[in-house]
Image 1: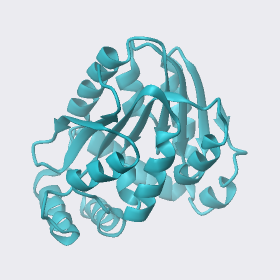
Image 2 (image 1 turned 180 degrees about the horizontal axis):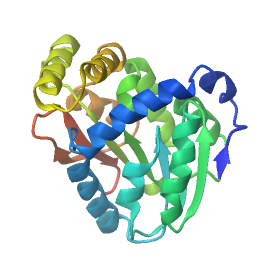
Image 3 (image 1 turned 90 degrees about the vertical axis):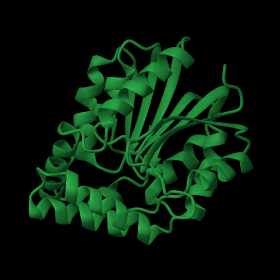
Length: 251
């Protein structure tokens, strides 16, 4: 189900023309198909984690879900019964609807800014999730916004729920400018099938929209909001991306 009537949706998606989405979509698909960001390895680790940790029927909230292709792959043969995905892009969510069709669970897709939608979910006591997934989305927020939304997400988890963060991170002692240059150096060197125009799109996005934190900073924010444990289940070969799981009670 695609909810296009959710508050905050109309003004957010009106400026996203189809042509812009298609251009970004083609680059994204090229990155995925060539595994430039190690999505395949991360998906395998996430799939195993969901099988091992969430053996009972579970509900998942997916923030910034995009087309849900990554999540749907990781959810295959798991015990999921309910999935709620949030994203700003209507075209992406329309594709997500098809991708999630292969997962036998109740699916709800909401158009909107997840940082605003979460505020409303907190007001509904029925909106509790066993797993919250944020994949390559949190780094778009500034530090204060990260702090605020993590505090809200704690209220949406069940007592033994887990928050799964898959995102880019800075190395300890590395400032943002150094991180951006290090990341783009690798893009230019290793993402060999990108055209010059596609590289420009990627470089512009990273330079203007990526605000990653160090793992230590993330842990401090999560601990502040009651997450007592952090485990790193994946670290990519260039030490730019990690899968971190935050919880009160890992089995």
